[in-house]
Image (cartoon, rainbow, N blue to C red; front, top):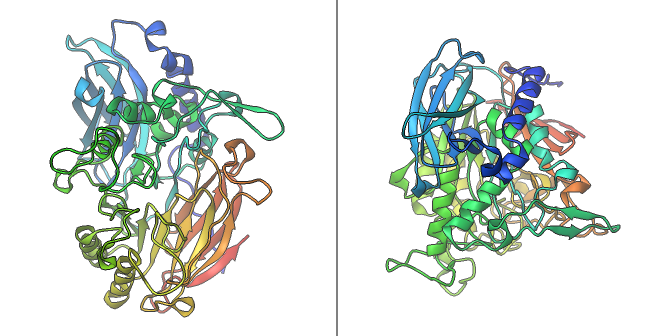
Length: 526
């Protein structure tokens, strides 16, 4: 059965190109690298760019960063000319948040392309520069949806090389005109430095933009903040985030490699309550720079549900904040966890309550790829962290929760995994799909090993070859993202794995038929 690709809506390609050029002109690389040499000293300026996130049917979070203490002013309109203003709001950008500011715009119309204008005013009311961004609110009716996802940015020393186009995958995703973007984690590599040069095969040289904060492994709050600021030096990154709202989650490199709440510390150690100071600094910087809704009742953790109309609920889960220590294997195996009892109970409740056709579970890590830091440890029945996944999957079967897909990154290659109890050691679950994508802009790795606990089969995978070796530079084209389209008329979900040059590598259509087994394959396209 042929499925038509849903029509792209909203901004035209010309509008995107015009605004992208405007954004680049307003925030050129030179002004970002040397803000006080080229800017008017008496007016507040936007440091980096603007972005939106956690878009719902009637609201969105707006974020920006100033170059000094100032008041962020935001206007929202259905017209790019701002002839009519729908909403206005303001928030302070203060030193204790590194001059970042974010606010919630509410009372917005559903399913609309909206434009927002951001500026900073100083304490005397002197207005600074303004920039314009765009987002689309979630629909409250049945209409086609498209979104993209990926992860892993500026890792393994591969920073911004302007001569090689910078972070090109962001420009490619922008040209795809998605409704929103799920960032699956590793927004930064706080534990990886960015050197001025890296040698490439054949004698060429990769030349990075370098900053003081990205020249050392992050330990201080200023260094964690500097990791996020580094990404804003890229033209493609700024243009994309101004026009596409982001649903953000984190993984390990926002803190340090393989971190968990217990066992991750720097030389200053822990506070009296046992809190890791390194994790606390990293968590603070993450929330300062992400366009996320504030959820103080969850102690800074990032799990949440984002409803995107009748066809889609997105469940953003947190596989870091509750996990047991990766390196401590001496304790009771039954106490090992990846989600934690509180989050697992929340996820079950929300899945049961969801009336959306599709339920996308956005995860930090894949389920069946063998890794000491992840979930799967090798073939056999569930052990350690796999017990939580087994519990969740069997619950979903008993509760009749269908039409779920798992989306993730982390592995630095792209793959489509189909899980089937007929291939599994643990069999108390319904078949489902898991799709892996990334890196957005980092080293590429070769495909990993799958275990048989939940019966995954790699239907497609692409990464480095043995001849190329791991940690292949971004300039070799093996940078990946995924695209999801949900057709309003058929409710079919089409998942396409794509590369930095926007080539369709592999695609599958999945039908949510009530009379068919969940996750039934309709067609695969190579």
